[in-house]
Image (cartoon, rainbow, N blue to C red):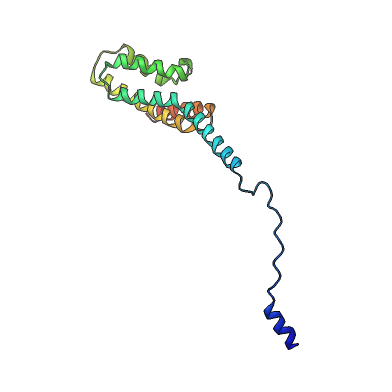
Length: 155
């Protein structure tokens, strides 16, 4: 027994059995990582392009708030930009009345404040639409309409 114990101390233990091969989805493969990165980049590029028009509307609304142009001219430009996204027949009545008043009003402090309030509502709605544009075009349109109606109701 003592000999067997001494012999066991001298001989190294047997190596462990090799592990089974990893499944293909767990193997670190370069092409799989590149495909995922490419898919994410394409998705973000498309989402950014969907939001481009909403960013343009938001920028125009911001410019209208502190613009140097007459209120009637600024209102016409803002309404034209808004028609790109939303037909005028679907506008809330309060927004349509505000734009009509702005188009045909004389320059005054009341007209400037009305333009400022209308541009703020459009900026608020365009910001919501821009956030929703990352998901889909229809969600952006829905978010814009909902944001504009909410902003009109708060007024």
